[in-house]
Length: 280
Image (cartoon, rainbow, N blue to C red):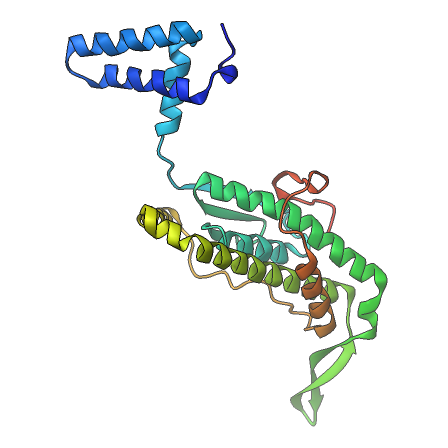
């Protein structure tokens, strides 16, 4: 037998189509004729009928929305919310909706499998870039020259008084601000890329009637999410509770602008988890 991989798809499709016609007709003679034609083609090409049947079934299988759990990191690990922010930003540009666990240890992605695959591939690459860039920023010591505004509560004459003071930026604060700005910039870049692509293909979409298919896809995903999701409320994103560092935000934004929006073998990371990175 010839390896199925050596057989042109068009031959498998022809044989599979004949088998499908044989199985769908109520006329016994027609069924026999279709089956005989399929068998003749299969014999000439050394194709197993089961292989052809599986091929046509795979081609005709209609994709449907699904839910997939994306691990982010272990509970208690610092920076998980910025990791989530990065994944959610990527998902927003790829027709994937997200629910976030309260612990930020995982994200539930809702979408079509190919779209979720794209998100995971981008996330695995961009997460490594984000963590490396923030590590380099912290190790450089640049954050030490900046200050952060804090609100201090003091007691004066028996009353509590709040005042704003400038304090040195802690490493953890600088890292969180850096990663928040990086993720935000990636989200904007991906949104711009999507808008550019859509602008280029709009004439083709209108001409081929693909717009209706895309609209149906959006409706199907919305219905699936509404029926499947148990989420309550809306994820608000990370908050730098320790303070705001403009310098770290600028550095993170610059790194986000320079990040590669693609995958590379050296940046591969299964499911995007980095158990040992990101802590200060």
